[in-house]
Image (cartoon, rainbow, N blue to C red):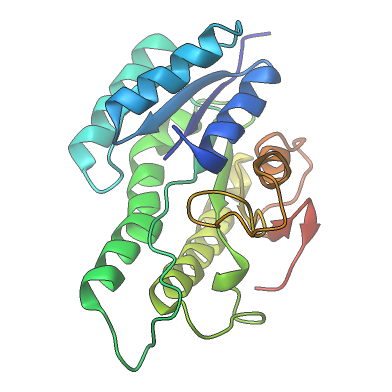
Length: 233
């Protein structure tokens, strides 16, 4: 059986890094991507020293050229992509108000958290379609749930709600091809974004992402999950 390959965006620290580690521990070849080459290489080297099959490649999800370069790398080295985890995210704009918008933050959050994920999917889809078990996981948030959303993070919440729309659209279009697409909320996790007061460890948060990335072929698609349990859009 040919080894499966996964790509995780924004993966040289926090949830992305732990997701990459957990997938590698399950036997995946993992491409760890991000905008900080130095930190990305160090993260990959550390996991390689633990005999994990992890490779770093620079990628800026806002730059189509850099995504194309990663596509070429994966195509030449692996021939296909089995798992895509859209983890890259910025600007948890706590304390901001929709009535007093900071357009710079709103634009950056939208471009990275939503449009960036869309660009990555569209560019790498051809490689995912070559997999017999294609999986796309969009790392979302309860802050993007229309049911549970609270005021105070307008840019982040709107971008994650838009990501959830992308999940529904992609899942519908790719269902007949057997590609499963889901949104995952990792919960409030102790990361640079979540802060030290968060109740969940990075390992706990990443486990739900890995669950969605490694679903069986008869698993759910087009859903929103936390810890493997469906939550409200």
